[in-house]
Amino acid sequence: MTTTVKDLGEFKDLVGQQVGYSDWVTIDQDRINRFAEATNDHQWIHVDPGRAAKGPFGKAIAHGYLTLSLIPGLLGSVLRVEGISMGINYGCNKVRFPSPVPVDSELRMGVTVTDVEEVGDAVQVVMEMVLQVRDAAKPSCVAEVVYRYYR
Image (cartoon, rainbow, N blue to C red; front, side, top):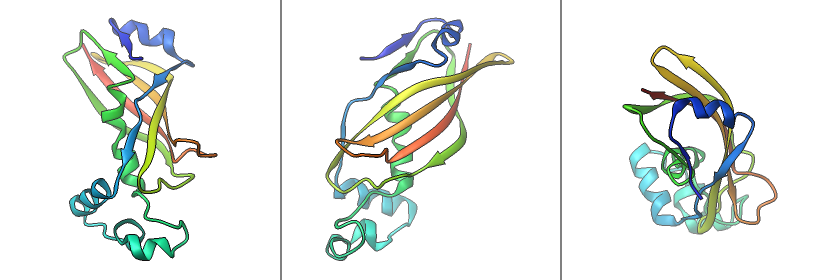
């Protein structure tokens, strides 16, 4: 279910609330390989399934930054902001990768609004994004992400 914000002032009412979960997305080897090509990060734990099967995780795993990079796309299935001229990713305050994302696992993201601040002609919204592999004991990525939405 997508939460829709029709007026930027509504963000203040969302502070402290989990606004929803994204759809599940499968992280397959092709996606991992394409990310490796795009970032020139070809570490064997990501791109060599044979060697990775004998490694510490028992199979290839996604790059941490691949997991982080999914946030903007997944956010669209959780939160829709109307009546703005644009929205930008302003950065991250904190990012951690507590557990791996094994190849062929399903991942989704939960979103909680943690802070809202007026900044000039924009509203700055801080959200905690928690990306978790289905049935995993710990999240794979916890990120405090800052967005600015302009009137």
